[in-house]
Length: 319
Image 1 (cartoon, helix red, strand yellow):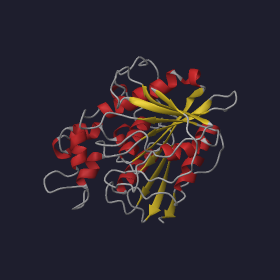
Image 2 (tube, helix red, strand yellow):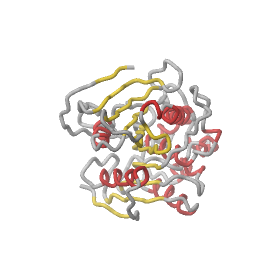
Image 3 (spheres, helix red, strand yellow):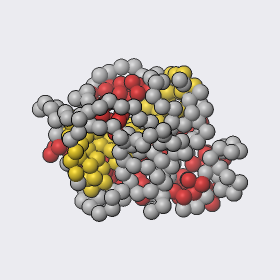
Image 4 (tube, helix red, strand yellow):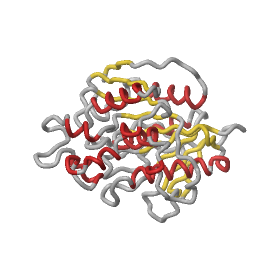
């Protein structure tokens, strides 16, 4: 574990979303001196560097425990780093209203499903178990993720009451892994629907449609339908799920827009709160400038800080 204190220089960075590569290495944003940035904290009682998290906490947050935004990175489940969303988390923590946690997890080259959700749930349990010591609010934990990370935060949201998805990692297994709200940026939600509706050339090759999903599951979707269903957030939707904000571009050629439509419809049909933000013409990892960052922060403000506003489905234009 290391603690870093750096001078702040405002920079712009882009994510790596699935197959879409950024122009510069994500996570290069320095952190302000007003924050404590603690990296590589083990959450699963192992020495596996993938099973660690980074903490970003304002140094002067007053006497009240802070709500927490937990970010799960993308990268097709086969690559990625927990530091990737640092620039966005710096912006949120700079408000003084939030602490941020960025979670690493085992990739598909090391472990197959359900290892990834077991890791993410162990991280949530660690945050909740250590909340008082860190000055955090254990009851106000929201999650956010993009692409593969969007899939994992959606799973955290819909399977909060599913014991089979909890795993037995870490020393905090008696602690709840439920979350208060979910912000899902273009994450896959239903692998069986993904396979059945895959257009030619969309994340496929001639023999194995969606090979990154096959690597996650340990078999192609068509050969492992039960496992594909077990890895699909829609399989666990109930009325008790936390509020969702789902954001997706209509021109996404990596994760089809219909995946978010399917999840949104399932949540609505179960009377679970869900808002779908459609980015017209938006591709996978469309980048900043669409107004979605402001919506995401507003969603957390609503559900974690009580700044109530009305939420309705809406369409934004890609820039």
